[in-house]
Image 1 (cartoon, rainbow, N blue to C red):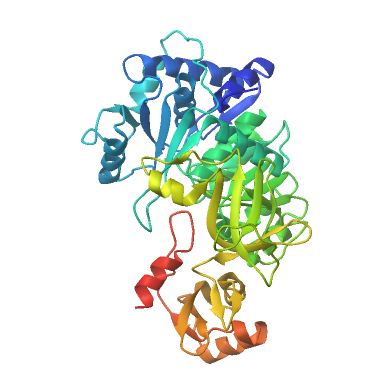
Image 2: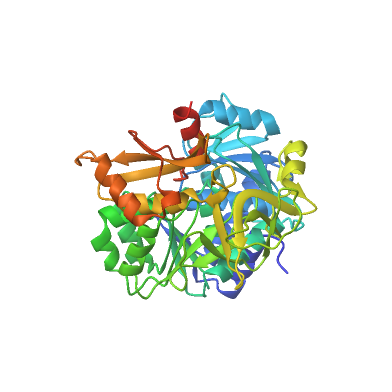
Length: 489
């Protein structure tokens, strides 16, 4: 049984040496070529730079070099710590100092933060070295530390073991029904857990991953699809929405060759789902639920079943159940929701240097979330929203997504967000913030008439406020807390 992702890569290099493993806009690597390159990079890293257990900060270059440096760290048992592309000096310095890192490998100049090596220099040195045997790690050894973006508070370092990475890879592999011929393109940032884990899943599976530098360069994206015979796509809901807007006709050309599309990182709007179903009638369409702490815990095939709030069935290595406010397991349904609790081999080890936060979040291997939801008779899991976001109107629990999914379909609404607002009579009422397209004349009365005709009376917003932009994180997650802090003073 393999103990790490890189060990599985080496296994594939013997079984299918000439098969494509990874590629980007510059070149592709077979499994044999990938294994040799990783082994040489490992020699360079160990030659006075890194030892087993050391922390190595690596700036995302959004190409195969980044993944190979990651795998080289795994090869020698170093701990990989990904940084965003062009991460701020202050952020890099903070992470470097917090974990007493051994070095930084980057394209940017981070010499003021600590010992910094240039990616190009490391790659060049690797060309002339002799390979060495893999320093086999234990499945429970730390593989990487993934820092959150810190958009709503102090960044947290999430400690992930090799065992967790393998379990997450299996969750994805079986969740999307990967096969040996899968060639999946990823235009999402590799420094974020979602894209990194999709890469691991393909390498674990023995299939191919193609790295794209974003989705805005449509010509380059389509060229990669053509060059490497891409038959699967991993995107975020925000990116899907963008592609559907600016490249819908181009996407239709690949309707017959794309076997599956997987999405994650944020709430997937109903309108986006419907457009994907229309353009890709033969394609399997998946939406993943999970977190950096418990990767890809649940998967929904929304081509087969689609209902507001449904996140599908627990992944192969995950167990999901519902607990009350006292964290006691409970029976749930739509009228009696509780909080989602998750357990399984894909779980994090904890938060780096934060035992108190770890103990507050994980108890006896169970991750307790703040997501309010329930499980139906068929075993499907539903999320109504974050506990603090759910609107308690006269004792009725209202998920803000129920209102947002209707509001965003109104002509001229670019984006929207619904939050709970205090009310002396009802306890809480829905308040809706909307972002209007520049070219549209907004009529509030007509919009309210549309909402009343489309929603139950209890779900019609008490007030609607037009704002210039709905706050979202870099990967498209709606920042309700930030919105409430800014607007509900």
